[in-house]
Picture 1 (cartoon, rainbow, N blue to C red):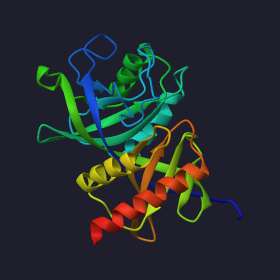
Picture 2 (cartoon, rainbow, N blue to C red):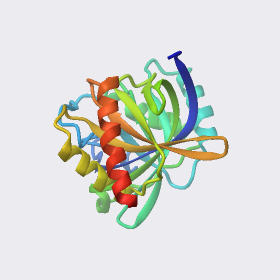
Picture 3 (tube, rainbow, N blue to C red):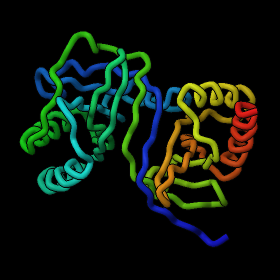
Length: 239
């Protein structure tokens, strides 16, 4: 099969625990979270205390992705470290919060500098509150650009995050249905640990749904096996 590469815009949806950042790693009186277990289904993932894998700066209001992308390019011209930032929405305690998700930052010492530069570009952050110290299950919807290699129809490798793969599915799943199906698939598959999340991209004015698979041992055969199990469970759900 000739290699096929696609670049699309879409989203990633998942459930994660969050805990607020309470020290001076962020600006005073601002609300920010880190994810202590960014891949809760993957037990091989052991984040260190020194590297913030995922950080969420909670916004006071709404920010367009276009505006963030322009601000991000300006900031990258004046800092000596790399980072990735995108827009997302978090739902917990029957509330919805707009946020900037930050990743690929070298260490916590860079977060406050980055946040200060965002403020200088007109970004306003939500005030800190003890009410949001720890969130057991936050529903997170992340705006995302996908750069994918199609290894066979419906199976993709991520060209940016090399330990991520994607399985295209024909049926749209709500999060509750996905979580139940994912639990059943995990039970039936006696394979290495991995984490799964919902994803989608836009093409031809349609939403195309996928399942994101994360594991350091990603491979074509693994994705094929997982796809078979998900298709079984989805058919059963619809029957």
